[in-house]
Image 1 (cartoon, rainbow, N blue to C red):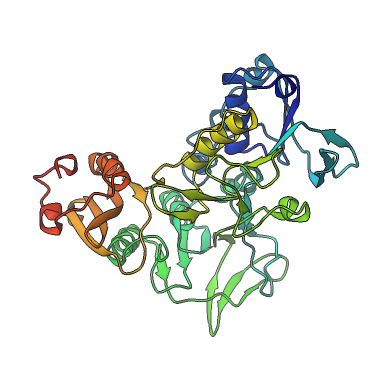
Image 2: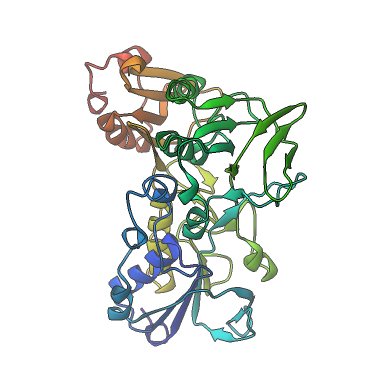
Length: 407
């Protein structure tokens, strides 16, 4: 690294998993200059996935969510400023403007601004009792209410909605899921997988309504019912999970390129040589898949954080990995790798009735994605096949006696 970088100041906007990993990787790479993490939330960097699972269920506490203990950052001389909101960037003077008018100078800047929940704007959406789930504070605002008899309505049948449903039903809540698409998990899994998860949730007592659009929320002092056209659903509380939006405003206002995220190259570099970006907020190229992506996933946040750190130090290493995700619901561990598209051929390996199977997606016989339910070996082995763009025989793929690695 150059002397100027070695002695400089690297500022990271966003103290989520991508931002924290960037700071950690800077120190691991030997950077001895100033590292500052600016985070809007009151907590130090923590893991988000457990929020809708074990944290919501009360199985882990806040301290167990932290990526590193507080003294780790002190020992590595990483300054974390929580409850700190950024109002703008000045690329000409290389300064970050905080909302309280303070200015923080930087030699290199990393934007790890993440995303925010997509909010509903229909009548009554701001009533007390209507919640979203993105942060520790969000969960702490409603999880104590999860008790037998509570009428919970969940708007959105994606991963977050179904994970919350699984926790709530185990607490004895009356749970209704409202999904505007024809199937739950409609955008991310095959119809067979969607129908499997719908059947599992319904067997547990969840009331699922698809092709159902919320038009209003009603209540006197707090939400009491959810309106879907002529139909109404009674609710003590409502949790909305309809996706997130990338936080690109700082980058856009500073004149950086935006296209469904902050546009970066495969080394997490923006068009400004002093600014990098990582995590949910970025649109980046993936050489393995041959397309640009904006991924909302922990593995991507961590890997891209490492890439941003190295690039900021003048040691760029192209980043390209097969995307992977996971979801825990009841006794089901869903592990997914690759990205499917409408029209892909679906091959089911295993017995869905036994709750141990994989949905494999082929595009012109090339394996492009695998979604494994309680089938960890398929998940692990499919990653290499997807990266290699392996061409598979659908008939052999159906045969669980043949391991994926042997294809």
